[in-house]
Amino acid sequence: MKRPRQTEDECVLRKITKASDALLKKYKQPEEQKHVKEKVLNDMWKPVVTPLKKWVEQKKAQSSDGQKNDPETSVHHVWKSLTPE
Image (cartoon, rainbow, N blue to C red; front, side, top):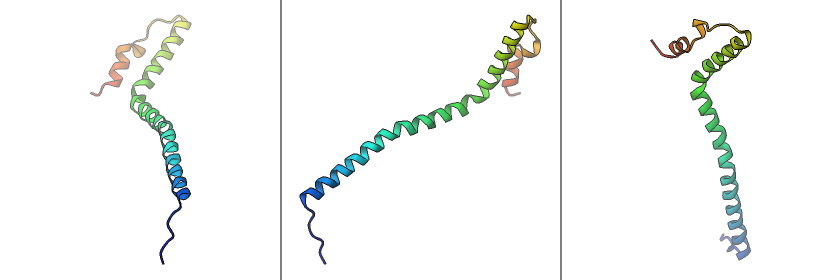
C-alpha cells in the first residue's frame, strides 16, 4: 500500500518544526555549557582556593584582634601545605 504524497503544507510544517527544534537546541546549549564549565572550574580550583580562603579569614581575624603574625598561618606555611613532598 502506497502512502499518499505529502502535501505542500505538510512539507512546510515539517520544515518549520525542524527549524524550531534546531533553534531551541541552540538556545539551550549555552545554558547547559555554562553549568558544566562552572562545575569544572570549581572542581579544578577548589584545592587551591579553599586553603587560601582559610588563610585570608585567619589574617582578617588576626588583624582585627591585633595579633602578630603566627608562623602557622604564614604564607610559607600555607604554601608548604599545598605543595607535595
